[in-house]
Length: 246
Image 1 (cartoon, rainbow, N blue to C red):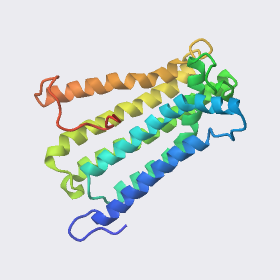
Image 2 (cartoon, helix red, strand yellow):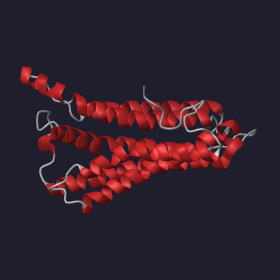
Image 3 (cartoon, rainbow, N blue to C red):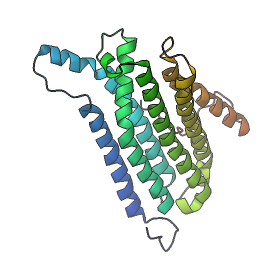
Image 4 (cartoon, one colour):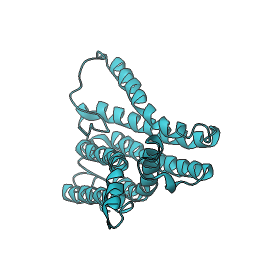
């Protein structure tokens, strides 16, 4: 891609087109998430089974939104893009479109397990070996996708003013990069635990790993506040990535 004359980044109009393409790709990923579990409704029983998939869809939708908000927040911090940031954005699109398939499989099977079989999805994973493979594929995909965000925020920190990053926003970009580093580590840990933990007795442990992410984010926030001399309970002016969906 050509570099602009006044800056080393892509022209703002091309940035807007790139962000629009990424937004549309995330919307398509949500569509794939729905279609992957869609079945023709022939009777009332089919309707009940379709309604039973709503919790799994909500969980998958929330995770897709988390990644979308991460890219949206990056767009706010870096209004000017160069060829490398555009390449990373396209790689994120590629990964999210692949990620939705193991995401749907794991969330629906997980909801079936924790509901005692009352929700549909128990038949999706037929053996411990398959469960281990699903955890591994999902964990690696989750980690790679998060790692791309880690690289994206690292790139804007490196490019600084050339990417349009205001000095006042540098601290937020640094914290966001650290957050995506923690999220990446969670995916890798989950994939590793799938091969270490006896899944026949503790099939939920690799999935529980992702619930540890908020604790990692808390310690990052605590470290950043102490490093910059702020009180722990003092509110921040801007939210870090990923944004709060609420």
